[in-house]
Length: 138
Picture 1 (cartoon, rainbow, N blue to C red):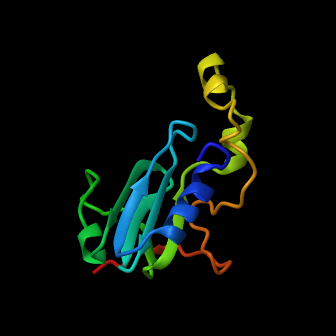
Picture 2: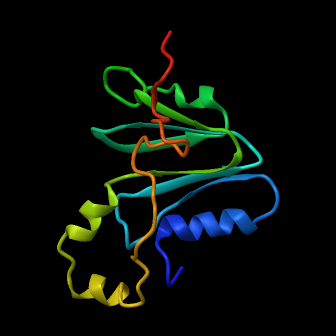
């Protein structure tokens, strides 16, 4: 991880890992960003652009929970197919790199951990089309 960003580090780990799993990863170098990945099992993610909440589960139906006073669930969902997909949810990379960082943050970044790398932003799908679809509502 010392010479890569969070997305590339998780991509490399998923490529080397064996077995079946779903995981979520955070990093202090990218506050407000979460990566959700799965390999060998399905994984679903629910989110809303206006709510600082990301839900994930191996069963898509588990995401149909009330998280608002109105009783509604989060409106957008991405379903990972379990073949090693990774989704990055959070601020776009350019906004993170352009923000002011204090002395401690710059010191933590001295290794080059925040560097170039292709990442998917909120709702971007690996096949180039948005993987974010409105969640199913009955």
